Length: 232
Image 1: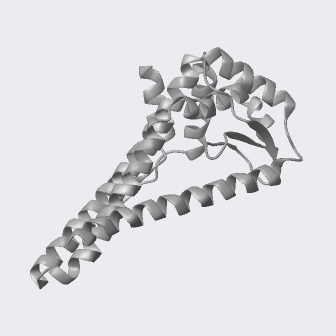
Image 2: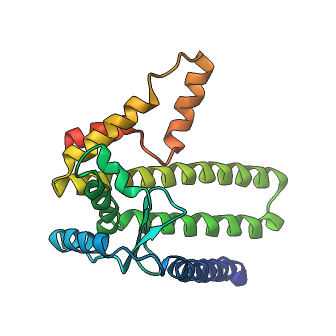
């Protein structure tokens, strides 16, 4: 009886250790992959923005030949990775590049969503392990009920992860706006809305499936981001 309650905890600790090791290896691999292409000019811009916003700057700013956008890694070290075509965003607005960098720094300034994601993974995994260990002690009806509850929990978990990711994007936009980049962000998002074009006519079934899938989409639409920026 007592062992049954300790096994999930031991498994969770083991999984967390494995994930941490993999993330550390990924960070080391990123460091080796991009060590030859640091971007001193962008690094100075990033450091200046971080100092002004009282945010710890990333350890390195790299230019990646195999990446088209911008991304911030947060474990084991903070890396800002910029694609070689990143400078082209200034064609949309003279400060579009700084707005994107400020958005990425915004992810560093709002770490709560990362903590929520980690906690949700650990809780769901512990529940799954507990379910597996409980199966030999359940009746057929009890096992079916437990399986149904587990499926509901997984669906709720996917919804929570998507909501946390969307919240992180909105918070990063708000941070960039607070640094004075509302104009460039709005300009880029308006371009994204224009490029996506008008919504094609869809059947009732398509509209229903889209509405059902929307809460599980981790990326907020440009229209939703514009609406949030308008409320900042």
